[in-house]
Each structure stands twice: as structure tokens, then as C-alpha cells.
Image (cartoon, rainbow, N blue to C red):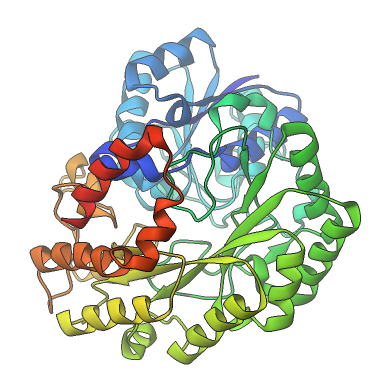
Length: 491
């Protein structure tokens, strides 16, 4: 069966403005895993990464139809929700014979809206590799699953019954043994699309012949932060040490990777595994450098030293706030003292660089508490920092709570139609745009938070230490672009 999987165009310019230049282009691992499983099952699979190629909606449609697919799958995040809505609707109107399937968080949350507005035939919920494979069996057999039953026998899908009623089957396709999955089908996308830019929101700076890749070594997260959409309710599952280092070695030797970002929600959850991975990297003599997200509870000196020796060069710490009361409200389960200790451990025991991630405008946060977060960020002497405005993204617990109370615009009107402009407002980095926040805590104002976000950047970056540090990242050919972006963000 001919299958085309699409990483769609997104609304990056509308949602991030000139700040979109900071976003690196990495391979769309989610659909590449699905592609690998579908190909392993004997299907003819193509992948279009419209985001990385900079394709518009018309060009994506043209490329799709030229491939004559029987099934098209779209990965649908909030930043691409509008594009998928428009593309899917046009495909179903003009080519109803093509089976259109949506997956990922935004599609899962708004499954009914997509289905009832004629944008797709099916929505996959949760981890899609095996669900999508089973859908292809159902399609090949003319509407009959491997067990001889209909769609209702499949796990974790939504579709419309003949009378128009929404049907959602139970389950979410959780894969308990990640070792069963093949490596992502990276050969289905163009290598030259993915590189490390010289302008980046990461500590690690690209340019020249540096090649950046991404990996997933585990799924699920034991924490339940209310603003997060990552695998809510799923127990963490991990690849073995050998699998992790095998993939790292393959990326270094076959793809020339000089840097790999580990996309795990919490790579460091199993300390023994991290120690073993770092030891195996050294034993094999790998040169590739890497970074990951980290939880402050886990950064003890001995682990930091091992990670440094094993090639780790940067950590992103989800610090969120400098006010303990606010951390407790969003169920962060960390303390300010744990943050200070973690940062101190990394700085004293390694050369690993630290980026702090902060959120302004948490529920009930006052302007003075926002200022306290800014002061906390500057006191920590981090290498970089990001300050976002709280955005209750679809799929998070906070989104569910606020939308149920009627305090949050979801974009879905009472008649079931969709206001696509609302979806474009789901962004945490409004300082580079003229957009209004999708939600503001009643204790602050939209204008006040926008000014606070700019104030945070000025307070953190316009110091002698940071000016010198960031100046070393600048190349002669990107000075003008950086100044333009910085001026928009700071002032």
C-alpha cells in the first residue's frame, strides 16, 4: 500500500514572528518511527517534511498527489493544527478516495472538530506506530481488521459512525517494549535539510560542517506538571544501554553527527542507566556531543561528572519560577534550593552549559512574583535562559481545567466549526509578535506580561558577562539578523 506521511507546514511565523529564526530544524522522529514500522510491514512509504523544506500548502498538496497515495498521515501539533485543518479538508473534498489519518497531541484533543469538519477519516490517539500499522491492515482488507472486525476493534482511534456520531475506541497504543521498534526511517528524508544553525535557542552553536540530530531513548515521564503535554499518565519505558549507544554510534558514523539532542521527557530518570550509557560511549570512543532536558532533583556531582566525561555539553533545566508557591501550584515537585544545588553541582563539577527555562504568568502569579522569577534567573549565573509566557497548550491538565471552566478559548465554536485564528494564539513566545496571549492569569494583564517578558530578557542578557558570552556566538554574516531579532525581543 502506498503511504505518505507528512510533517506539515506550521504557523511558526504567525506564532513566533522573527523569533522563529532561533528554532532548529531537526528530523521529525515521530513520523519517522511510524514510517519505519509501516515499511517493515511491507508498505511503500514516503515522507514529506514540509516544515524543514519550507513548503506552502499548495506545494504540499502538489507533492502529495504526485505520489498517488492511498493513505496520508499528518503529524498534528498545535503549531501546525491550522495547516493540517486546511490541507486535510481540501484533500477530503477533492480526493475522497484517499484515507486521511491524523495523529499527535493537537489532533487527539480536537479529534471531533477535525472529523466533523471533514478534515480527515481517522484520528490516532497516543503512540501511533502499531495503531497506524493496524489501520493499514484494515484498509487493505477493505474495512476489516486482522481479527475480522471493523474499526471499533482497533485501539486508540476516533472516527465517525454512519449517523455522524463520534466513536473513540479505548487505549492509546502505549508501547511497553521499546526494543521492538526499529530505528526511525531517517533515510526517507533529505539529510541536507537538518543542520545546526549559527542562530539558535540552544547553548550549542552550529555552523560550518556541524551536523545536528535528535534521538529518543525513552518514553513517558513520572512527573505531572500541569502545564505539560508530554505523555500524561504514562509510565516511563526505556531502551537498553546498548540500543542507545548503538544509535548514537550510527548517527556519528553514518550521518556525520557532531551533536545529538536527546528528546526524552526525562532522560536522566534512571541514574544507573545514565552512568552505563556514559561509560559505554567512552568505551567505544565516540566523539559525538549531546544534550538533554534535566530535572534538578537528579543532578548529583558524581552523575554530572560522568555525563561530562560521556560527551554531554548542555542541559536544559525546567526551572519555571523563582517562587516556591507557584511551583507548588503547577505540581512541579521541586524546590528552589534543589534548583540552586543542581546548578551549583553542574558548574562546579563539569564544563556542561546550562539553559534555564522559565515561565511568566503562572496561575495566580502577581507582577512582583514575576520580578522575583527574573531576579532568581539572574542570580543563578546560567549560560542561557528562556522566558516564556504561560500557554495552556491543548493536551495539558491546565488546558483541560481552564477550558472546562469556560476561561479559555479553544477555537471550537458552539456550532462545531473552528476559529483557526484562536489556534494561532497558542504560543509562549509572544514578544517577537503582536499576538495576544491565549490566556492571562487574572492577577496580571496581557500588556503587563508582554512587558515583563521583554524585561526578563534585558535583565538576563544585557549584563557584561552575557554580552561577552553571546558575542562569542556571533558570526559576521548573522550580525544584522541577530540585532534585528534582539531589538524586537528586548524592546
